[in-house]
Amino acid sequence: MSEDVKDICQGWWAREITAETGPARKTRAELRRADTALKALGVPAVHRLNAALAVSRLDLRHDPVRLALIAVALAHIKERGAKVARAFGAGDTPALSPIRFNALIHATTPAALWRPLTRGLAVIKGSANPGALAADLFYWNDLTRTRWCFDYYGESSATTMELET
Image (cartoon, rainbow, N blue to C red; front, top):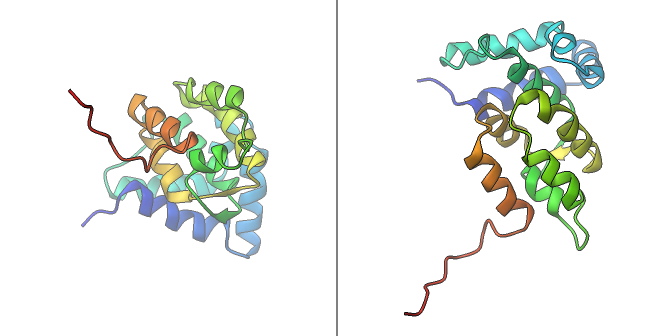
């Protein structure tokens, strides 16, 4: 049985990013410094991520910028936490300002998402759910961005109210 994006990326994050080994520290540092897809694609661990995805028929060789973005974003996660959009909107004053959040969700390509996402992850001090973030970035589309809006504004757990007629 094949694994899904969330499980594969979460496992990769645990092995390649958060492990307290010399290679993991090197990978973490290289990916956090990578400001272009090409720099990230020069890190061997990124290709191990794609190999793991390819086993489940989720190969991203056709979309290398998306692969690089996922790897870089996961490298910016220091500890497991809430879903990213919830973390961005948490607090009386959101951790990430509504202006920055809107810039992020209006990014429709991995390249356009790179900078606002890595800056946002720094604002929340790298506390996020790695599997959920990876899956969201893998399938970044209107539905994902809409769900992020509900998560950011704290409405994801709201119940639907029936309208009186």
